[in-house]
Image 1: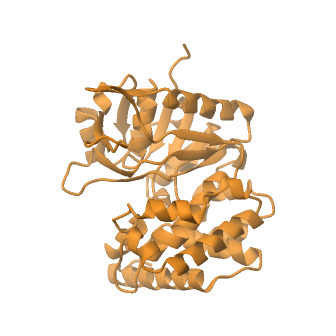
Image 2: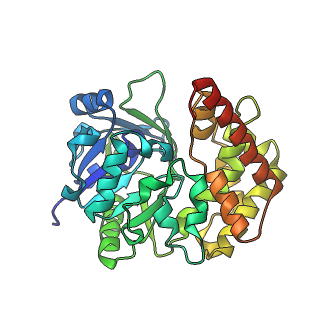
Length: 358
């Protein structure tokens, strides 16, 4: 039996979902988070509630009952060089925060393979895509300089397709999975680092949960792809759904964003789908609109981007602007994408004025 891996994950909210799978496989996970979160996780562990098809009640995964070990720590309490793999599970604007910024730079310098689990691909990952001018995409990032220490070959991207939220009425160590789909990760440049991902994929696949009715297979797997474009399948979903949850003065659910104007959602989705093909993806790397639209029927909350804007956030992930800039490099535009970008720009500017932030 192979020795457990040591895995560092920046971000304990969404990061807890991936951590639960890794702990099932017997690995040692360190979650970097805020002091109050760290104290709670170190005292009580964390819980992940996961729906199971055909089962009335979700299963509750308790980190304290899993074979692996978890600890939580602050940004100054870890050395990335001590780990076999680093996961990035914070929202892109958070990486410029004091403490997080310095830790991210240490990750880049460490030489440890790093897997991003963000909607927003890190800038060095975009440098792995032939024919893209990554430097021209910097305006889409809150602060592109936080990625300066990274070597593209040591960074890969994992599409955060599973949806999960922290129920506001519960403690911050509880995560509710609302859409139990798979994490889709692209290979690393190195076969050795990719082999680590494939090991984790196989171990997570083998996990069974000890339910009263007997062992059951859990959803939310890790799927490793040889194509570096597979995680970009999320782009179409973000533009057709997540960012269209944002309205001029409020927000709507992802279900409403897609199904209240199905034709517009499909037009945006297909535009981004075709853009991904134009930069090198195979159609087989991507997800057909109909499959996404069916999944969107269950997305009865506004997207995290819409909620953040509504709560006054001065910065959010700008995958909308990134897609717009990539499209322009290929001589393409879409009126609704341009409208989305302009709307988010306006709302962020209003939030910054209100908060007195530049």
